[in-house]
Image (tube, rainbow, N blue to C red; front, side):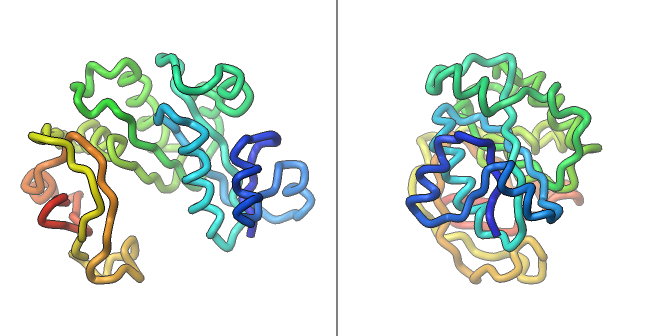
Length: 219
């Protein structure tokens, strides 16, 4: 089934060239099916590249998926045009009354900073608070995951001596968890980060579980 995207989104041309089925909203509404509603908080500098990468993956769902894009109001993006943000993105305030099946929070190249020193940290916390009551399921990526662990569970990030960059083997830790159902026992996963988390801090919290682990990349 197709993904449902805003009209004129630049990623549409790339998706079409890759034969990924995407419908703009007027077309999708004629199908008369209830789509999954997802919102993406895109914190990456290269917005269009990130949009395209995520939409490629979401398009593999058998369901129609309607996508909204969220931005922060307290940070000025320098790698994308203001026109693109105005046309395709809204801040949290525009979505506060909506409920979503899913939220994706991307990473951001700010892992060298203390969380409290990130200029949109307070806004990020408001998104997390809002998602607790308005979103059924949330996926956090890279810095977004470390920030959520810190805000929700008090798990501190730790700076690495050098950047972890490459594709490393990760070993499945729980073959019966529905989140990893269908995963191979060993999977290659990409990493590009300057920080990580201490596995002992995760193990100390009964609400958290390590699902994959690798000798180079850790949990």
